[in-house]
Image (tube, rainbow, N blue to C red; front, top):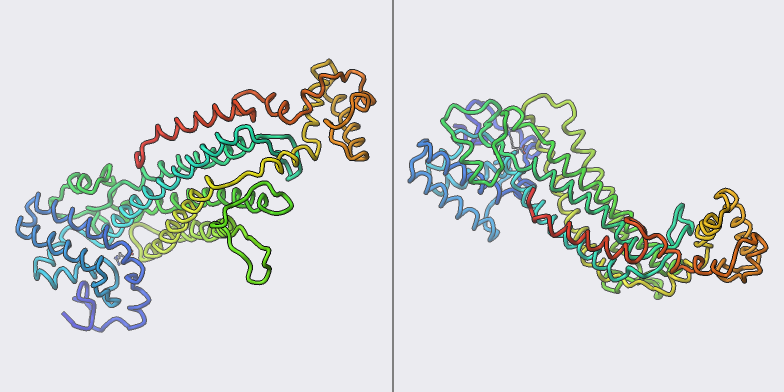
Length: 468
Ligand code: ARG
């Protein structure tokens, strides 16, 4: 074997790899992040090979001990990653052979880097999904508790960002929570398709050794071996599914972020974020900037980009494995890190949101937010809705001119627009009356918000962590 070529596949080569090409094609600078899963997969593979008598028990033990030592070297930062050895798989295998000699070279029996790398990424994604799920649950719990605490807190609800009708702050937060409940379902659904084992597909067609893929799948905690070897080595749907989950989640977090940014502004003045989630300005001493939500909003772009990158990576690829697939890792790694950090930031921050109740209440009083309630009142007294709409329109015009909210007008003033209006109108013109009247499942009434929070709590605790 030529010393100058890669020792794992150099046998048929007559000249060494061009130095630039070696660097260009190597992935070890980033795929070393899969080392733990690579070792985990190799230990299961060796265990299975011994079970079917392809390896002796002694060979298996030497391999497993060697791999465990290598794991320690990597964790202690003592491992020497080599770019000429291309990737994480060949780096670890070469080190194993250094340590235990010829037996190390037997590990790759009945396996290829194609099924190996697909297995490693799936193990990695499964681990990361479980970490992400913990943060997502923590965030949902924080929202549910905040919503329950603020079930009576009144704020203006908006359409077109114009004051529409009063809602409760708890109801608004539970709307966020609903978005996340769908994200949670998508994550668990994605996990089901992550947790299928490619190992045993070998390069593309399977292997001539009497492997038992059920044993390996069980050792690695996979639900089942992948059904088709060609599909097993080439499928990256799970990566696309994860990044589409991540894109929708970040889209949701960006919407929440936008509202937090607006609400902390002097113009809205709806909430305070504790100082620990904000930073100041180096030039304007008065500033307290909502950096955390702004940054989460900004990070949405890179996650959408990763989804596009992976979709495009897979487009038109013929079966089975192609080197293109090496490009799946960096987008996935970054998507995983971004999602985990954004969820952590939100899970820490949301329970610390301090609503400025008086300010929200005053904002809801401005902007004629009970105009629909007045129209509904007239309808209950026999006025057709279209006529009621017009009557209220006139009273709003009058309010704009006189700078009075509907609830601030006297009965006589209101009677100018319809003599059907009586003293009892003031019950519906109050903000409390307005929200309490929307008293049905999914409505903003405080008792409905508390009931919805309880249902959300129950639904969340019914989900088992990591269970698909
Ligand atoms: N580094 C490669 C990847 O990330 C591993 C598989 C390489 N397989 C091959 N036949 N070159 O996909």
